[in-house]
Length: 429
Ligand code: EPZ
Image 1 (cartoon, rainbow, N blue to C red):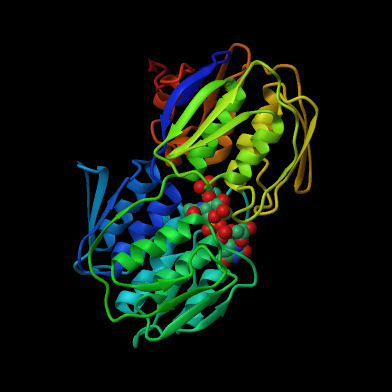
Image 2 (cartoon, rainbow, N blue to C red):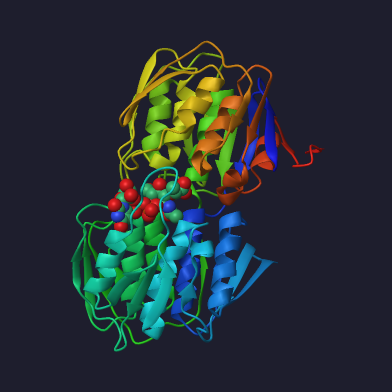
Protein backbone atom coordinates (compact mmCIF):
# COMPACT_ATOMS: atom_id res chain seq x y z
CA UNK A 1 0.00 0.00 0.00
CA UNK A 2 1.25 3.48 -0.84
CA UNK A 3 2.35 5.91 1.87
CA UNK A 4 3.13 9.61 1.89
CA UNK A 5 6.34 10.90 3.44
CA UNK A 6 6.73 14.52 4.48
CA UNK A 7 9.88 16.21 5.71
CA UNK A 8 8.81 19.10 7.90
CA UNK A 9 10.21 22.59 8.04
CA UNK A 10 9.75 24.11 4.57
CA UNK A 11 7.59 27.21 4.18
CA UNK A 12 5.06 27.29 1.35
CA UNK A 13 5.39 29.94 -1.37
CA UNK A 14 3.44 29.92 -4.62
CA UNK A 15 0.11 29.37 -6.25
CA UNK A 16 -2.28 26.43 -5.90
CA UNK A 17 -5.18 25.97 -8.34
CA UNK A 18 -8.27 24.58 -6.62
CA UNK A 19 -9.96 21.59 -8.32
CA UNK A 20 -13.66 20.98 -8.89
CA UNK A 21 -15.57 19.86 -5.80
CA UNK A 22 -15.67 16.12 -5.19
CA UNK A 23 -18.84 16.36 -3.11
CA UNK A 24 -20.62 18.20 -5.88
CA UNK A 25 -19.23 16.20 -8.79
CA UNK A 26 -20.50 12.87 -7.50
CA UNK A 27 -24.09 14.13 -7.11
CA UNK A 28 -23.96 15.81 -10.54
CA UNK A 29 -22.78 12.53 -12.04
CA UNK A 30 -25.80 10.79 -10.49
CA UNK A 31 -28.05 13.42 -12.17
CA UNK A 32 -26.99 12.02 -15.55
CA UNK A 33 -29.28 9.03 -14.88
CA UNK A 34 -32.30 11.36 -15.13
CA UNK A 35 -32.05 11.91 -18.88
CA UNK A 36 -31.45 9.92 -22.07
CA UNK A 37 -29.32 12.77 -23.42
CA UNK A 38 -25.63 13.42 -22.62
CA UNK A 39 -24.54 15.47 -19.61
CA UNK A 40 -21.10 17.10 -19.97
CA UNK A 41 -19.46 18.08 -16.69
CA UNK A 42 -16.44 20.37 -16.88
CA UNK A 43 -13.97 21.35 -14.12
CA UNK A 44 -14.16 17.69 -13.09
CA UNK A 45 -11.71 16.50 -10.45
CA UNK A 46 -10.02 13.17 -11.24
CA UNK A 47 -10.35 11.25 -8.00
CA UNK A 48 -10.84 7.70 -6.79
CA UNK A 49 -14.43 8.61 -5.82
CA UNK A 50 -15.40 10.00 -9.23
CA UNK A 51 -13.83 6.99 -10.98
CA UNK A 52 -15.63 4.75 -8.60
CA UNK A 53 -19.05 6.31 -9.23
CA UNK A 54 -18.31 6.18 -12.96
CA UNK A 55 -17.93 2.42 -12.59
CA UNK A 56 -21.31 2.12 -10.88
CA UNK A 57 -23.05 4.34 -13.46
CA UNK A 58 -21.60 2.17 -16.25
CA UNK A 59 -23.15 -0.90 -14.64
CA UNK A 60 -26.51 0.86 -14.62
CA UNK A 61 -26.32 1.59 -18.36
CA UNK A 62 -24.47 4.91 -18.69
CA UNK A 63 -21.37 5.52 -20.74
CA UNK A 64 -18.78 7.56 -18.88
CA UNK A 65 -16.01 9.20 -20.91
CA UNK A 66 -13.24 11.29 -19.37
CA UNK A 67 -11.26 13.69 -21.57
CA UNK A 68 -9.37 16.96 -21.57
CA UNK A 69 -11.46 19.53 -23.40
CA UNK A 70 -11.04 23.25 -24.07
CA UNK A 71 -12.46 23.90 -20.57
CA UNK A 72 -10.00 21.50 -18.91
CA UNK A 73 -10.88 18.10 -17.44
CA UNK A 74 -14.34 16.96 -18.40
CA UNK A 75 -16.56 13.91 -18.14
CA UNK A 76 -19.30 13.04 -20.58
CA UNK A 77 -22.08 10.91 -19.09
CA UNK A 78 -24.76 9.39 -21.25
CA UNK A 79 -27.51 7.01 -20.14
CA UNK A 80 -29.77 6.48 -23.19
CA UNK A 81 -31.34 3.58 -21.34
CA UNK A 82 -31.13 2.27 -17.78
CA UNK A 83 -30.14 -1.34 -18.28
CA UNK A 84 -30.04 -2.27 -14.58
CA UNK A 85 -31.57 -0.76 -11.46
CA UNK A 86 -29.30 -2.73 -9.13
CA UNK A 87 -26.52 -1.13 -7.06
CA UNK A 88 -24.77 -3.96 -5.16
CA UNK A 89 -23.30 -3.82 -1.66
CA UNK A 90 -19.69 -4.20 -2.76
CA UNK A 91 -19.98 -0.93 -4.70
CA UNK A 92 -22.16 1.15 -2.33
CA UNK A 93 -20.12 0.08 0.71
CA UNK A 94 -16.96 1.53 -0.81
CA UNK A 95 -18.49 4.95 -1.42
CA UNK A 96 -21.58 5.98 0.51
CA UNK A 97 -22.62 8.67 -1.94
CA UNK A 98 -23.33 5.89 -4.49
CA UNK A 99 -26.55 5.49 -2.50
CA UNK A 100 -27.76 8.70 -4.19
CA UNK A 101 -28.39 6.78 -7.44
CA UNK A 102 -31.52 5.40 -5.75
CA UNK A 103 -33.66 8.54 -6.28
CA UNK A 104 -32.79 9.07 -9.97
CA UNK A 105 -33.32 5.35 -10.69
CA UNK A 106 -36.82 5.34 -9.17
CA UNK A 107 -37.67 8.66 -10.78
CA UNK A 108 -36.64 7.47 -14.26
CA UNK A 109 -37.63 3.78 -14.23
CA UNK A 110 -40.06 3.35 -11.33
CA UNK A 111 -37.92 0.78 -9.54
CA UNK A 112 -34.51 0.14 -8.00
CA UNK A 113 -32.64 -2.19 -5.70
CA UNK A 114 -29.81 -0.37 -3.95
CA UNK A 115 -27.68 -1.58 -1.06
CA UNK A 116 -27.81 0.27 2.25
CA UNK A 117 -24.38 1.88 2.71
CA UNK A 118 -23.71 0.77 6.32
CA UNK A 119 -21.71 2.81 8.85
CA UNK A 120 -18.38 4.52 8.44
CA UNK A 121 -15.43 5.57 10.58
CA UNK A 122 -16.75 9.07 11.30
CA UNK A 123 -20.18 7.96 12.53
CA UNK A 124 -23.22 5.71 12.07
CA UNK A 125 -24.49 7.84 9.18
CA UNK A 126 -28.00 6.42 8.73
CA UNK A 127 -30.03 7.15 5.57
CA UNK A 128 -33.46 7.33 7.22
CA UNK A 129 -34.08 10.91 6.03
CA UNK A 130 -33.28 9.90 2.43
CA UNK A 131 -35.81 7.06 2.60
CA UNK A 132 -38.47 9.20 4.31
CA UNK A 133 -38.14 11.82 1.56
CA UNK A 134 -38.47 9.19 -1.19
CA UNK A 135 -41.52 7.68 0.57
CA UNK A 136 -43.08 11.15 0.83
CA UNK A 137 -42.63 11.41 -2.95
CA UNK A 138 -44.68 8.21 -3.32
CA UNK A 139 -42.01 5.50 -3.54
CA UNK A 140 -42.87 2.21 -1.83
CA UNK A 141 -39.76 1.24 0.14
CA UNK A 142 -38.99 -2.21 1.57
CA UNK A 143 -35.82 -3.17 3.36
CA UNK A 144 -34.58 -6.78 3.07
CA UNK A 145 -31.19 -8.30 3.72
CA UNK A 146 -29.36 -4.98 3.59
CA UNK A 147 -31.03 -3.76 0.42
CA UNK A 148 -33.56 -1.03 -0.33
CA UNK A 149 -36.23 -2.26 -2.74
CA UNK A 150 -38.02 0.80 -4.10
CA UNK A 151 -41.00 0.97 -6.40
CA UNK A 152 -43.06 3.75 -7.92
CA UNK A 153 -44.66 2.15 -10.98
CA UNK A 154 -46.86 5.18 -11.67
CA UNK A 155 -44.03 7.66 -11.09
CA UNK A 156 -43.19 9.93 -8.15
CA UNK A 157 -45.52 12.72 -6.99
CA UNK A 158 -44.57 16.15 -5.66
CA UNK A 159 -44.84 16.52 -1.87
CA UNK A 160 -44.19 18.88 1.02
CA UNK A 161 -41.19 17.53 2.99
CA UNK A 162 -39.88 18.94 6.25
CA UNK A 163 -36.50 17.54 7.32
CA UNK A 164 -36.26 17.15 11.13
CA UNK A 165 -32.62 18.31 10.92
CA UNK A 166 -30.30 19.46 8.18
CA UNK A 167 -28.85 16.76 5.93
CA UNK A 168 -26.81 17.56 2.83
CA UNK A 169 -27.24 14.10 1.31
CA UNK A 170 -30.99 13.84 1.98
CA UNK A 171 -31.63 17.32 0.53
CA UNK A 172 -29.66 16.44 -2.62
CA UNK A 173 -31.36 13.08 -2.89
CA UNK A 174 -34.85 14.60 -2.61
CA UNK A 175 -33.94 17.19 -5.28
CA UNK A 176 -32.63 14.49 -7.63
CA UNK A 177 -35.82 12.44 -7.22
CA UNK A 178 -38.35 15.30 -7.39
CA UNK A 179 -37.23 17.04 -10.60
CA UNK A 180 -39.18 14.67 -12.86
CA UNK A 181 -41.97 13.91 -10.34
CA UNK A 182 -45.53 14.92 -11.09
CA UNK A 183 -46.32 18.24 -9.37
CA UNK A 184 -44.57 20.58 -6.95
CA UNK A 185 -42.23 19.51 -4.14
CA UNK A 186 -41.23 21.87 -1.36
CA UNK A 187 -38.29 20.97 0.89
CA UNK A 188 -38.25 22.69 4.28
CA UNK A 189 -35.18 22.83 6.54
CA UNK A 190 -33.04 21.99 3.51
CA UNK A 191 -29.24 22.03 3.72
CA UNK A 192 -27.73 25.31 2.43
CA UNK A 193 -24.26 24.06 1.37
CA UNK A 194 -22.95 25.62 -1.89
CA UNK A 195 -23.00 22.17 -3.52
CA UNK A 196 -26.82 22.31 -3.35
CA UNK A 197 -26.83 25.48 -5.43
CA UNK A 198 -24.45 23.79 -7.88
CA UNK A 199 -26.86 20.86 -8.18
CA UNK A 200 -29.77 23.26 -8.76
CA UNK A 201 -27.85 25.06 -11.52
CA UNK A 202 -26.98 21.79 -13.25
CA UNK A 203 -30.53 20.41 -13.00
CA UNK A 204 -32.00 23.68 -14.31
CA UNK A 205 -29.54 23.61 -17.23
CA UNK A 206 -31.02 20.15 -17.94
CA UNK A 207 -34.52 21.66 -18.05
CA UNK A 208 -35.60 21.22 -14.42
CA UNK A 209 -37.43 23.91 -12.45
CA UNK A 210 -35.69 24.20 -9.08
CA UNK A 211 -35.63 27.36 -6.97
CA UNK A 212 -34.24 28.29 -3.58
CA UNK A 213 -31.25 25.91 -3.28
CA UNK A 214 -28.71 27.42 -0.91
CA UNK A 215 -31.60 28.54 1.36
CA UNK A 216 -33.62 26.41 3.82
CA UNK A 217 -36.61 26.21 1.42
CA UNK A 218 -36.25 24.59 -1.99
CA UNK A 219 -39.15 24.44 -4.45
CA UNK A 220 -39.08 21.92 -7.28
CA UNK A 221 -41.74 22.01 -9.98
CA UNK A 222 -41.64 18.63 -11.67
CA UNK A 223 -41.15 18.52 -15.45
CA UNK A 224 -41.97 15.65 -17.83
CA UNK A 225 -38.38 15.11 -18.98
CA UNK A 226 -34.86 16.48 -18.69
CA UNK A 227 -32.44 16.99 -21.56
CA UNK A 228 -28.66 17.09 -21.98
CA UNK A 229 -26.54 20.01 -20.77
CA UNK A 230 -23.04 21.25 -20.04
CA UNK A 231 -22.21 22.32 -16.50
CA UNK A 232 -19.00 23.41 -14.74
CA UNK A 233 -18.49 21.84 -11.29
CA UNK A 234 -18.18 24.37 -8.45
CA UNK A 235 -14.64 24.76 -6.95
CA UNK A 236 -13.88 22.51 -4.00
CA UNK A 237 -14.25 24.64 -0.86
CA UNK A 238 -12.84 21.87 1.33
CA UNK A 239 -9.71 21.54 -0.80
CA UNK A 240 -9.41 25.34 -0.77
CA UNK A 241 -9.75 25.42 3.02
CA UNK A 242 -7.27 22.57 3.41
CA UNK A 243 -4.56 24.43 1.48
CA UNK A 244 -5.38 27.63 3.39
CA UNK A 245 -4.74 25.75 6.65
CA UNK A 246 -1.59 24.13 5.19
CA UNK A 247 -0.21 27.60 4.34
CA UNK A 248 -1.09 28.88 7.81
CA UNK A 249 0.66 25.86 9.32
CA UNK A 250 3.87 25.93 7.26
CA UNK A 251 4.14 29.72 7.00
CA UNK A 252 4.96 31.63 3.83
CA UNK A 253 2.54 32.99 1.25
CA UNK A 254 0.17 30.96 -0.90
CA UNK A 255 -2.30 32.21 -3.48
CA UNK A 256 -5.29 29.90 -3.99
CA UNK A 257 -6.78 30.33 -7.46
CA UNK A 258 -9.64 28.96 -9.61
CA UNK A 259 -11.78 29.10 -6.49
CA UNK A 260 -14.57 31.36 -5.31
CA UNK A 261 -14.09 33.81 -2.48
CA UNK A 262 -16.88 33.54 0.07
CA UNK A 263 -17.05 29.74 0.13
CA UNK A 264 -14.91 29.35 3.25
CA UNK A 265 -15.56 32.57 5.16
CA UNK A 266 -16.13 30.75 8.47
CA UNK A 267 -12.60 29.30 8.21
CA UNK A 268 -10.94 32.54 7.04
CA UNK A 269 -12.39 34.42 10.02
CA UNK A 270 -10.79 31.88 12.35
CA UNK A 271 -7.45 32.01 10.53
CA UNK A 272 -7.42 35.81 10.89
CA UNK A 273 -8.35 35.51 14.56
CA UNK A 274 -5.37 33.18 15.00
CA UNK A 275 -3.06 35.79 13.49
CA UNK A 276 -2.84 34.76 9.86
CA UNK A 277 -2.95 37.19 6.94
CA UNK A 278 -5.98 36.64 4.71
CA UNK A 279 -6.53 38.58 1.48
CA UNK A 280 -9.52 37.62 -0.69
CA UNK A 281 -8.90 37.94 -4.44
CA UNK A 282 -11.17 37.82 -7.50
CA UNK A 283 -10.78 34.05 -7.84
CA UNK A 284 -9.67 32.86 -4.43
CA UNK A 285 -7.60 34.06 -1.51
CA UNK A 286 -3.99 34.76 -0.47
CA UNK A 287 -2.88 33.28 2.87
CA UNK A 288 0.20 34.73 4.55
CA UNK A 289 1.92 33.84 7.77
CA UNK A 290 5.17 35.28 9.03
CA UNK A 291 7.44 33.57 11.56
CA UNK A 292 5.16 34.55 14.45
CA UNK A 293 3.36 31.71 16.22
CA UNK A 294 -0.41 31.56 15.73
CA UNK A 295 -2.79 32.04 18.67
CA UNK A 296 -5.11 29.24 19.76
CA UNK A 297 -8.75 29.82 18.79
CA UNK A 298 -11.90 27.77 19.37
CA UNK A 299 -14.14 26.33 16.68
CA UNK A 300 -17.48 24.54 16.57
CA UNK A 301 -18.56 22.71 13.44
CA UNK A 302 -21.99 23.47 12.02
CA UNK A 303 -24.01 23.21 8.83
CA UNK A 304 -23.13 25.80 6.15
CA UNK A 305 -22.38 28.69 6.50
CA UNK A 306 -20.92 27.50 9.82
CA UNK A 307 -17.46 25.96 10.23
CA UNK A 308 -17.36 22.86 7.97
CA UNK A 309 -16.92 19.50 9.69
CA UNK A 310 -14.78 18.54 6.67
CA UNK A 311 -12.20 21.15 7.80
CA UNK A 312 -12.22 20.25 11.49
CA UNK A 313 -9.34 17.74 11.37
CA UNK A 314 -7.13 20.14 9.39
CA UNK A 315 -7.84 22.97 11.85
CA UNK A 316 -7.05 20.68 14.76
CA UNK A 317 -3.66 19.95 13.18
CA UNK A 318 -3.04 23.70 12.97
CA UNK A 319 -3.97 24.22 16.61
CA UNK A 320 -1.51 21.55 17.82
CA UNK A 321 1.30 24.10 17.47
CA UNK A 322 -0.64 27.29 18.28
CA UNK A 323 0.03 29.33 21.39
CA UNK A 324 -2.52 28.37 24.06
CA UNK A 325 -5.47 26.00 24.33
CA UNK A 326 -8.05 25.53 21.62
CA UNK A 327 -11.47 23.94 22.12
CA UNK A 328 -12.80 22.09 19.10
CA UNK A 329 -16.43 21.00 19.15
CA UNK A 330 -17.71 18.54 16.54
CA UNK A 331 -21.50 18.72 16.20
CA UNK A 332 -22.17 16.95 12.86
CA UNK A 333 -20.60 13.48 13.23
CA UNK A 334 -20.33 11.60 16.53
CA UNK A 335 -16.97 9.94 15.93
CA UNK A 336 -14.92 12.44 14.00
CA UNK A 337 -11.85 12.70 16.24
CA UNK A 338 -9.95 9.64 15.06
CA UNK A 339 -7.14 11.87 13.83
CA UNK A 340 -6.50 13.05 17.45
CA UNK A 341 -4.58 9.94 18.61
CA UNK A 342 -2.56 10.00 15.37
CA UNK A 343 -1.68 13.68 15.89
CA UNK A 344 -0.64 12.73 19.43
CA UNK A 345 1.86 10.27 17.93
CA UNK A 346 3.50 13.37 16.45
CA UNK A 347 3.70 14.96 19.90
CA UNK A 348 0.40 16.88 19.99
CA UNK A 349 -1.28 17.41 23.37
CA UNK A 350 -4.97 16.64 22.87
CA UNK A 351 -7.71 15.30 25.12
CA UNK A 352 -11.07 14.27 23.77
CA UNK A 353 -14.25 14.07 25.78
CA UNK A 354 -17.55 13.42 24.01
CA UNK A 355 -17.92 15.85 21.14
CA UNK A 356 -15.16 18.17 22.32
CA UNK A 357 -11.39 18.09 21.91
CA UNK A 358 -9.03 20.31 23.88
CA UNK A 359 -5.81 20.99 22.05
CA UNK A 360 -2.97 22.49 24.07
CA UNK A 361 -0.46 23.93 21.62
CA UNK A 362 3.08 22.53 21.84
CA UNK A 363 6.28 24.25 20.71
CA UNK A 364 7.02 21.61 18.09
CA UNK A 365 5.84 18.31 16.61
CA UNK A 366 8.15 15.44 15.78
CA UNK A 367 7.90 13.25 12.70
CA UNK A 368 6.54 9.71 13.19
CA UNK A 369 4.65 6.98 11.37
CA UNK A 370 0.92 7.64 11.44
CA UNK A 371 -2.17 6.12 9.90
CA UNK A 372 -5.01 7.77 8.02
CA UNK A 373 -8.53 6.85 9.17
CA UNK A 374 -10.68 8.87 6.76
CA UNK A 375 -10.27 11.36 3.97
CA UNK A 376 -10.04 14.61 5.94
CA UNK A 377 -8.19 12.96 8.84
CA UNK A 378 -5.49 11.81 6.43
CA UNK A 379 -4.85 15.28 5.08
CA UNK A 380 -4.67 16.68 8.62
CA UNK A 381 -1.72 14.34 9.21
CA UNK A 382 0.00 15.61 6.06
CA UNK A 383 -0.53 19.18 7.31
CA UNK A 384 0.98 18.31 10.68
CA UNK A 385 3.90 16.68 8.86
CA UNK A 386 4.66 20.01 7.16
CA UNK A 387 6.00 21.37 10.46
CA UNK A 388 7.01 18.21 12.33
CA UNK A 389 10.76 17.87 12.83
CA UNK A 390 12.17 15.11 10.61
CA UNK A 391 10.06 12.72 8.58
CA UNK A 392 6.38 11.86 8.96
CA UNK A 393 4.95 8.96 6.99
CA UNK A 394 1.23 8.57 6.54
CA UNK A 395 -0.11 5.12 5.67
CA UNK A 396 -3.53 4.09 4.31
CA UNK A 397 -3.50 7.04 1.96
CA UNK A 398 -6.14 5.46 -0.28
CA UNK A 399 -8.42 7.66 1.85
CA UNK A 400 -6.53 10.71 0.61
CA UNK A 401 -6.75 9.65 -3.02
CA UNK A 402 -10.55 9.57 -2.75
CA UNK A 403 -10.82 13.32 -2.41
CA UNK A 404 -7.58 15.25 -3.08
CA UNK A 405 -6.40 15.66 -6.64
CA UNK A 406 -2.59 15.70 -7.11
CA UNK A 407 -2.05 16.65 -3.46
CA UNK A 408 1.69 15.97 -3.42
CA UNK A 409 2.24 17.83 -6.71
CA UNK A 410 0.30 20.88 -5.49
CA UNK A 411 2.22 21.03 -2.21
CA UNK A 412 5.66 20.37 -3.70
CA UNK A 413 5.07 23.12 -6.29
CA UNK A 414 5.00 25.50 -3.30
CA UNK A 415 8.21 24.13 -1.78
CA UNK A 416 6.93 21.41 0.56
CA UNK A 417 8.93 18.21 0.79
CA UNK A 418 6.25 15.60 0.20
CA UNK A 419 6.65 12.36 -1.70
CA UNK A 420 4.66 9.24 -2.32
CA UNK A 421 6.22 5.91 -1.44
CA UNK A 422 4.82 3.12 -3.59
CA UNK A 423 3.71 -0.06 -1.86
CA UNK A 424 6.86 -1.91 -2.88
CA UNK A 425 8.93 0.63 -0.96
CA UNK A 426 10.17 2.58 -3.98
CA UNK A 427 9.93 6.34 -3.55
CA UNK A 428 8.20 8.38 -6.24
CA UNK A 429 8.16 12.15 -6.47
C1 EPZ B 1 -21.98 15.23 3.20
O1 EPZ B 1 -22.23 14.00 3.84
C2 EPZ B 1 -20.53 15.17 2.74
N1 EPZ B 1 -20.37 14.03 1.85
C3 EPZ B 1 -19.62 15.01 3.94
O2 EPZ B 1 -18.27 15.02 3.48
C4 EPZ B 1 -19.85 16.19 4.88
O3 EPZ B 1 -19.07 16.00 6.03
C5 EPZ B 1 -21.33 16.26 5.27
O4 EPZ B 1 -22.15 16.33 4.07
C6 EPZ B 1 -21.65 17.46 6.14
O5 EPZ B 1 -21.29 18.63 5.49
C7 EPZ B 1 -20.71 14.12 0.58
O6 EPZ B 1 -21.22 15.13 0.10
C8 EPZ B 1 -20.43 12.94 -0.27
P1 EPZ B 1 -25.36 14.80 6.14
P2 EPZ B 1 -23.73 13.57 4.17
O7 EPZ B 1 -26.47 13.98 5.56
O8 EPZ B 1 -24.62 14.07 3.11
C9 EPZ B 1 -27.07 12.48 10.00
C10 EPZ B 1 -16.11 14.17 3.11
O9 EPZ B 1 -15.11 14.01 3.86
N2 EPZ B 1 -28.05 11.84 9.08
O10 EPZ B 1 -25.47 16.28 6.06
O11 EPZ B 1 -23.72 12.11 4.44
C11 EPZ B 1 -25.63 12.05 9.71
O12 EPZ B 1 -25.33 10.83 10.32
C12 EPZ B 1 -17.50 13.81 3.60
O13 EPZ B 1 -16.03 14.59 1.94
C13 EPZ B 1 -29.04 11.03 9.60
O14 EPZ B 1 -29.13 10.82 10.81
O15 EPZ B 1 -23.97 14.36 5.51
C14 EPZ B 1 -24.87 13.24 10.25
O16 EPZ B 1 -24.73 13.10 11.64
C15 EPZ B 1 -17.49 13.18 4.95
N3 EPZ B 1 -29.94 10.46 8.73
C16 EPZ B 1 -25.77 14.44 9.96
O17 EPZ B 1 -27.07 13.87 9.74
C17 EPZ B 1 -29.89 10.68 7.38
O18 EPZ B 1 -30.73 10.12 6.65
C18 EPZ B 1 -25.40 15.25 8.73
O19 EPZ B 1 -25.15 14.38 7.65
C19 EPZ B 1 -28.88 11.52 6.86
C20 EPZ B 1 -27.96 12.09 7.73
